[in-house]
Image 1 (tube, one colour):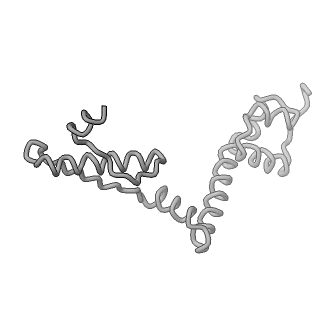
Image 2 (cartoon, rainbow, N blue to C red):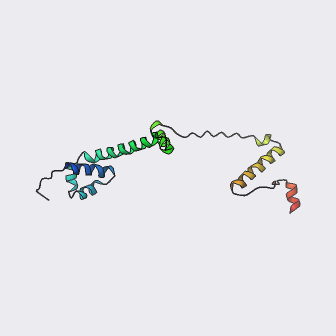
Image 3 (tube, one colour):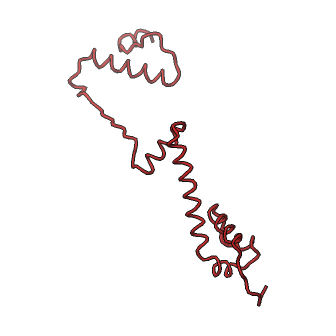
Length: 141
């Protein structure tokens, strides 16, 4: 309505803060109030920022309550990671023997163990020992 002076009510200020806190775009907020986006910026300049801060504060308060209640471990872990800098550490150490230094028997046993583990991970049930003897393979063919 051109020529009419717009005077925002406290309820409209609360609505703008709430909608902004929920992430509603400014153009949509203006539409809900039946005003132009320019009028929204002029009369509700601080409300969108405050609404976003209020929403973040409420979620943080809820998360904090969940994390400190002793009943929500996931919330406590998330809080510690996000706020206290916790992180999961995976200390992986790989020791590799020089295969040239291993006896044939030791090397063969490690290959058997590795193959058995791979087959089990793939879902196979390994009951018979696996034969890697080249002479036995040749005789079977």
